[in-house]
Image 1 (spheres, each protein chain N blue to C red):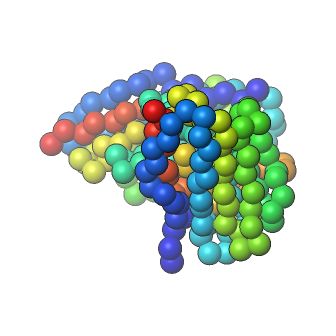
Image 2: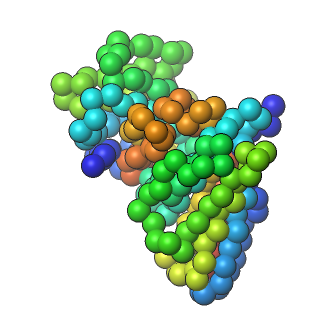
Length: 115
Length: 113
């Protein structure tokens, strides 16, 4: 069965600090997708990044970067120079391949960025 | 272009009643998925539809049903409502529903009294 664990529940930082959100996943599939979504207080889930299981290259996109390590089943997400607008709940999700696109989400990490 | 739209935004029902939630996907998207998000938890997969056919079903009772229309919009129906059905119901759409990013609506917040 698919499982996503986000051990951190709440993180509080001061503006301009870097923050890393941890994600560990479990799957028996050899190919899969990993996602990070952001949920501001308004409720809408906003897509941030996607990674394929066969591509472990880590990238940077603006203030966002991610570290995908298949050997440890981890997909960590870093925000550089955090801003107050980054305050939200962040979800890591595991996506199946094949006939459907079911996402298995973690419980989320509440990030508070203080001015 | 309009994003995923859901209606209504809020709904209050009593136990035993029936509810219908509606979703319009992003133009051109053929796949629609439904998720239930209980307060403090991550979303849980309920259904996925593609080209009016059910592609996937989560671990929810038969009281939950859905359908997709020729214009790719979708309805989620819940019968015999229980207090535990109180949640934010999210609809997501994507082009083919095969691993590409899903785009979510603002959700319908359902409260059961």
